[in-house]
Length: 383
Ligand code: HEM
Image (tube, rainbow, N blue to C red):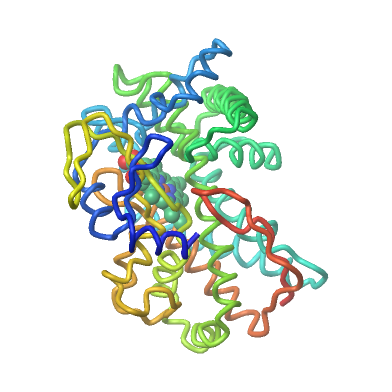
């Protein structure tokens, strides 16, 4: 998508799209929009075709849009603070031994030889195992969950194809049911984990409703693995396409934290996010009315040469300001899992590169075909 974004930045940075939304592609505009604290509350329910499909099915969408991601203050503040208590920098740092063991177990499987898919062996199972452990979920049908969340995240794009809309709706309903079962199981099997803590918050008066509980868990499940998988898979693809950068990281393992920032910038795991204007807003010379749907393109902002300079399109693991990428968003909804994603990315990519100095592709990379949570779906490699 990057050449297309460049064209938009140069010719139509505040685009009024024929499908009825606005599209921002400059770094400064995207940052300003996300920091402005506009509304997120109606962004899913307002989106016409998906809503119509729900109404046609007679389904209740409430449990799916009750997470912090789709709420404004004061609900947003209340819901975010419940989870933020667990996602402290200290708690995340304490996960390092567990994540290291999980990475090494995956790398052992890769070392066993034979054709190996990086996505199946490392990029998907790692974040999935980490979030499942943190939540304390029962053993779950991973393949089915992966299929369902893969469909669900299409709802983060502007979709017009009725077949896709139907599939998204069905996946959402199935996921809400699965999540309800998981929560019921946890009620009967409490332990020292995030899900038990959220259930306790639900029982503690009016801090969390039933719908909100389901929505938070579902959000963590999806956010926990549909994004980090792209960081790891896209990151490794980018390194393999830039062998001198691969070698740099191999010989300078201390660069791993900055490498993760640069890889997040270079190929953003989440390409866009959305806001609804609560009052008229002027960006550059365009007047955007209240109640408009705006897409802030993180992937484009991360390549905006006005901010990054002439090397915006090259991969440079030593880039000084790489951490200023917008891949985790900005403002009140800034990614709550950023520290966890960074930890997983650093250990997965860093350890893979140092263990397999001759890592190479062993076939064609396939992409998942999504506009927003865009990533490689298959990366055949040999160690
Ligand atoms: C929010 C990206 C990993 C949990 C966000 C947002 C972005 C993002 C862009 C803001 C969306 C918006 O402003 O509308 C990413 C990327 C990840 C990642 C690129 C991996 C590379 C994770 C992980 C978790 C997580 C591992 C937790 C397990 C969340 C939550 C929010 C969020 C709970 C909602 C915050 C709020 O609404 O206040 N993420 N994320 N994310 N992310 Fe992440």
